[in-house]
Image (cartoon, rainbow over all chains, first blue to last red):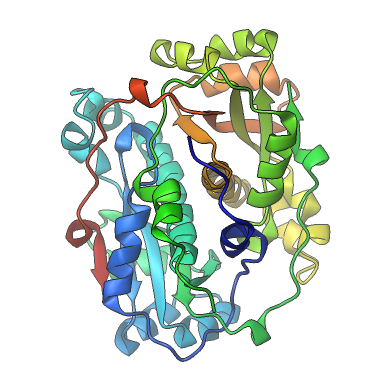
Length: 197
Length: 197
């Protein structure tokens, strides 16, 4: 049985963590991105389906391409972040289920024959994986600026021209510049959104 | 700038964490559920929209009702868990945006006039919030068994008869019984799902 994490760790993950709009001029090495993936990959997905695909945009060329898809208010944030990660999902994720979820050998057929179920599963689970990515980044001392203000079609046409992957949302990562933070937004009260039956 | 969490905390959140199918006979007090919410509520959502709504099913009566919606393989897991949490989303979340995201006073109109955008935003962000719930539960020493094998319509008709909330997925929580765990499923290799540009 596990204990509670200490207050400092809780603060780093949740209570003092912020969405960053600007980042310090400090690189995010590829080795750290690998360490991040090796941590977040353990987060649970339904039937262990792991539909997410991650494009880590670091070079100026790739940043320029991505920038064309972003809402104007998000362009500068992404250009100046050490990396912008496109959280996408694999429309063919179910073909990997025989390997990923051997307990249910015919699981793949559930998705092959039902596009709505396939799309909802890909969307829900790649979103979960995006959240695990944020939490794992924070666990490694990185800061995040997640964004959904962009044109998914332009991103998909640019980065996934064969149509296999679909963008879900994007996350700037790096070491945040707290002097550029906005005031923190209010959160909904426990009494208004939690019902104990 | 934050440091990396220590290996033990990383293990508790990710690398040693498991999906539990059975739980010890140990209560999850309402005060701990409140502590969990007060932690996970800080996770980021787009425009701070926070669409999730949480029904914590603890009583036998409510458990019996929920059980009618579950896939047969999930019924015993839920009945014997100290609590089963329905992660739902508020179809009217955008009405709270003037309060939650005052920087963009007309944001609410974007959703009121576009059902597809409204539904995708509610689904993506309530999924993120469900993932934050899992990570916050683990931060507090709790174990989780998330599930999407259930009939959403039955859950919605039973728990949300006025149609305002829609179930997304459910999470058993408690203190896990590791002797009932299945073998851990494989995870996809970094090289196969991460592309650095």
